[in-house]
Image (cartoon, rainbow, N blue to C red; front, side, top):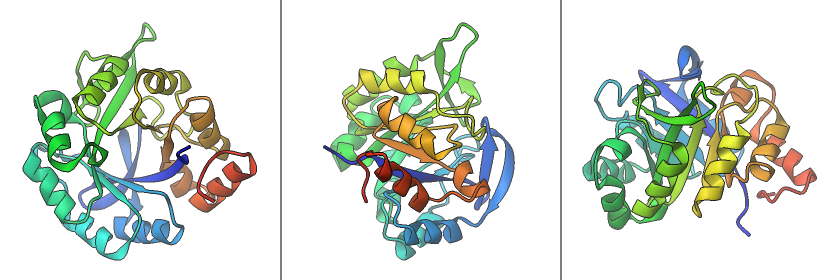
Length: 252
């Protein structure tokens, strides 16, 4: 059985690291290279780095930061933000990324997921799905940093992304982002049940037990978090020990 993963995430804005609340209210949290070194020293399973303004500003990600991280850190890097073409993906992989996360362009650019997975392998292609809960308790996929509704249901879109060749889903609840109020387990469970590829759950982690709940109750293959590591005394090392002590199948 594949081990569950603990994945810190770094959000970039103007080459700095920020933390958001519901994809808004940006708060500077330091330099991404410094954070990456700390997480590398703590031997995290993977690091997700997302340039959250790249799609809104119609530009590519800060590739120099990716290259710097890959030179100094040995953990796998998943990088996203502003990826629109096969050439963008090739450039980021050449700068040291191990995976790329595609969000807006995955929805808007017909054939990008399929062409990318054929060119680089499905394990390299992560489809990032940002979701808001609607008034009728239904969910909707949003793009461009959570600013534009698509009309897509996240379960439908996750299934389609898998069929097109995505190797993984990075699922974020915009409503829970930065709130530390707990993961949206019904959302996670619905997407996990609909696909056979790994699902990384994100948005709302506030306690060590939220990792366990996301993995055991939600069925997520990995849980990604940021605020709990930025604003509390918890760390990936403490999370791993907590999960191991409770019999969760994570890397010891």
